[in-house]
Amino acid sequence: MRRSGAGRRGPRERGAWRGAGAPAIQTIDRRQFIGLAGLSALGLWTQPPARASSVQAPSARRWAMVVDPKKCLEIDGCTRCLAACHRAHNVPSVADQRHEVKWIWKERFERAFPSEQNVYTEDSLKGKPVPVLCNHCDNPPCVRVCPTGATWKRDDGIVMMDWHRCIGCRYCMSACPYGSRSFNWDDPRRHMAVPPSNDYPTRTKGVVEKCTFCEERLARGLAPACVEACPDGALVFGDLRDPKSRVREILRARHTIRRRPELGTQPVVYYVI
Amino acid sequence: MNDRPVIIVGLSLFLVVATFPVWYNVTAGTSPRAPDLQRPSPTAVALVRQREGTADGLLAPSCVAPRDQMRASHMTLLARWRDDVVRNADRGYLAYDGHRYDKNLSATCLGCHDDKAKFCDRCHDYAGVKPRCTDCHVAPSK
Image 1 (spheres, rainbow over the protein chains, first blue to last red):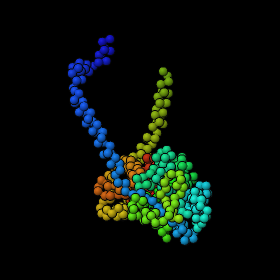
Image 2: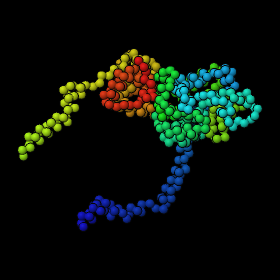
Image 3: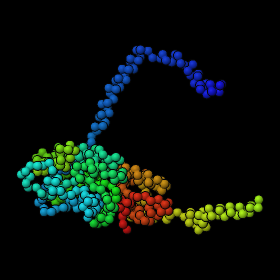
Image 4: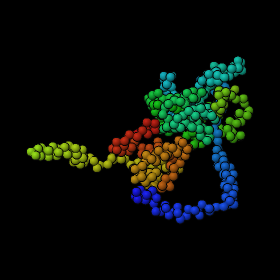
């Protein structure tokens, strides 16, 4: 009995309770309490604006692209943008169409823009190939569904991929309404037309890949590979937040459409009509 | 009690067999011999530093961290570089000796250590580890 009693209340603990207990409770009177409460309320008032301003710190840019498909058609069967992109990023050319991997490719106009149902207005583009790529949406559905955080939207708007984290579940592929994502059904190195370049990694079997707006080139101050390769300026790349940028200039002057705007994904690849 | 010699012989036989890998390596002299790694050539180092804009490539070549640290924890460094570059677009690395490097496995690491088979592989084979870096990252071909 004695032992269990000592175990429950150690000598130090007992002293603390007995010695300082009763007077310690009454160390604050009403006036002080109200004063402290007021100070705390003041603290609540000042905290949130300070935090908000640090979050809204200048996110410099919002990368975007404007495509002029009619310029694109001036050179018959031009695929220089496709070749430049796929060369720069070691994209395999898989013969089997079900397994093909593509970052930028050509799609017939009415397939790229199924909601453009005007009978005569786009006559000049009907049935014609239009370059399509990842739209780097403001509201990317692929990012929402990725279970591992392997794809996310950067501050500059690029929908980025971390191939180290991709587990190949292909949720993003189901979520993307533009078919911009490809899955590596096979080891991509077995399907390279030329040996892979040292400047960019390949992917492995079981990983999803897509256009990254050439973020590795942007980091070096270069334009995306497709834009650089385009012989007649049909692809224009720039900052949507800068009112003086080339993309904003074109958006002001010309009528542009986006792919499937009704879905609310807010693509930033615009097409001049 | 008459089984004592049998037991002793059996036990010592067991000990000999169980410790076979140890004394075999000791007698063959294989165990303590560390893998023979190819050091980067001064020209390769100079090239990498020239690309990075730190052009004093003629100084004694050094790595992005002291040798002991690289030997023990280069994988941690590479994993951090990977996250910095891919997830935070943070590409520059200021080394302990003041040199700046691009956080880039293919260009920076393999720019100096330009023969993967004689550098990475020798040690990894010795240690029995199989990193999968080059499944994606392209090692410069010799």
